[in-house]
Image 1: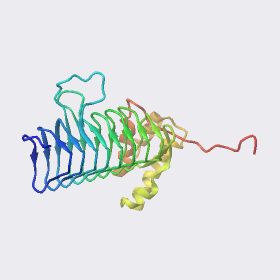
Image 2: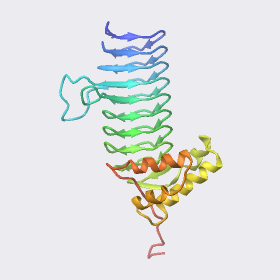
Image 3: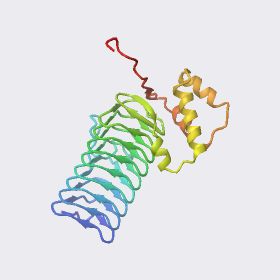
Image 4: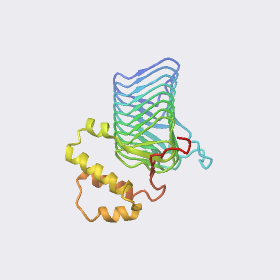
Length: 260
């Protein structure tokens, strides 16, 4: 069922039993599988794949949301959105939930209202993102993870499955458990093409923040005393911007138990 007001680009495919609302725009060559609902103000770019049973543009799960609020979902090009993914529209007038380009959202993932995804983000099955969560480029969110509203996930961060986070996860780190960082995403840095000097600086930045014995403010003050390459500079800029939620702490190695 496609509303006459919907705008479909060239070679768009709509599967059986799907419902497309009158304020929906779908870019060229996008494929929408069966039993999909796309409603409200939704703009989909070109070359997207929408899996069976997905819901895009649904009402936000916000008790303060007022019916009739004009908000939106904006999705770029080349995204894969698999079965039963839910992406809710913004909760305030004129606001939007935004997904960039070439992201992969696996089955059952949920993006709450006003989430922002960069490009080439991978979100594994059954991840739950609360409202206003921001995920930067190339992050990988493990299956079954949960993310508190208003938190941020930095570039190329990776999270272990079934973890939970209410604090910001800095760029380039591996995170696990509840609000803990366990190291750097070393493999991801190599695959992303960071050269040895850049990787060495990121490691030095990580050690300064997490292993120097300084608190965050002290580590940032010391970081400002030297010149960093762009990736390490971005690392500290992200940490400095973590004013609302704070950042995840380092999980220390446990010593031998008294029974050993």
